Every structure is written in structure tokens, then in C-alpha cells.
Length: 273
Image 1 (cartoon, rainbow, N blue to C red):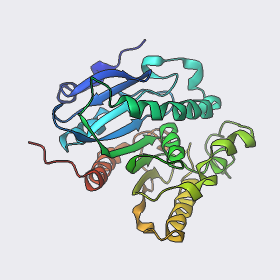
Image 2: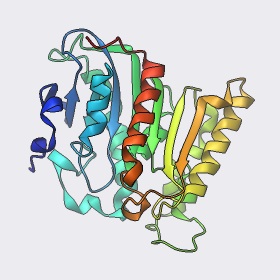
Image 3: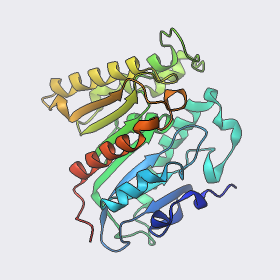
């Protein structure tokens, strides 16, 4: 299996362990590996791996927040290239969903016990990883907040959007899409702080579809007496990233800073020594 650990900057590598959590390969970075820390369970996008974009994890660790980055099914340390195709995105999402709760339980295993504060867990992901996170939030969960980027919570709109340009999405049977679609399950969504980052020019995940989902989510919060401003969408008109989808281009550092500040606000880490 490929080894991407050399991609990590030395400051992050010194804080990182590679472990397997309930069969899922994980990069676990901890501020000091001593005191219980808040943590973010993070899932990458299709075709890449958990070691990508290590500056994200380094920011979190320096802020006192642990990273638990997972390889999606068929990716990274459990690579199976046929699952990288867009026609298999929902297969990957569904399988990762089935693994998440076991991963959370495994965080308390012997080698990691006492290193994480179970009351200060967050979840997040980019693109396909973000789809997993949004769907997981429709069911009872332990998360205090969540952050996603370049993703969409309306799977029906994602796979059948009105497009004037860009590549066509993969085709999936409507009943398959509906079986996983977060937008059809908002009545069971518990209100927590949400941050969504997006490029308005995204060629793979239409911004309008995600904005409409965020509007619906804010309306759900209001309808049950929660504060709609807990749900925040931050977007850039264009970023220069590949396909306006991967990494936010010249705004990448700003996006990471916004996300880190969000987690610091809601997970309340201790001041790093």
C-alpha cells in the first residue's frame, strides 16, 4: 500500500501517530499526547488520501485540537483504485458511514485512551468526505460542531443539477440517491454549529445546490427554535484552485484559518503551552 507519511511537515510528524481504528487507517495528531484534547474527525475527498493538505492538521494541533484523519474506503492505505471513480462515490459514502461509529468507539482503545475529550468531538470533511459528515449529522451523534468544504448536503441536486457548464455528475439511480440524501432527513438533525466553505465557481459541486441546502438547514434551525446563525456559509467568487474545487487555491491559507478559528471557538481547547 502507498505510504504518504513523508508528505507531513516535521512539526506535524512529531505530533502524529498512524493507527488503525476499527479497521480504518487513521492519521492521529495530538497537541501533546498527554492531556485530553478536543478532536476533529476529518475525511478527505475522492481519489486522494488522509495525508493530503497537512497544513490543516498542523493548524489544529498548534491551536490545541487533535486531528483524527481517516482514509475513505478504497483510498490511501487501503487503496482500491476502482472505487476512485465518480460512479462509486455513493458506495464510498455509504461504507464510510457504516464505519464511523466503530471508529469513534475505537478512539477510546488502550493506545489512545484518555487522549481525547469525548464531550468535545467535531466532524468534518471535504467533497465526498463532507457528504459523509453531513449524512452522519442526520442521526443521533456525539459531535459538538462540524465543518465541511466543497461539498453538498442535497444529493438529489448534486447528481441532477441544472448546469450551464462544467463536467456532468455521475449518474446514480434516484432511489439510491434518496437513500442517503441528508436533505431528506433534516427533521432528525440536531442543531449544532456548522461551517461550510465553498467556491462559487466550483465545477464539480455546484455552489447554488449547497447554498440552497444551507438555507434549508437554517430554516430547520429556526423552525425548532434554534439560532439559524449557527449555520454559516463562507464562499469565494473564485479561487484559482483546480476545477475551483480542490483546496481553495490562493485562498487556501485563509480557508484553513477560518476553519481553525471555528473549531477553536466551539471546541474550546486549552491554550497551548
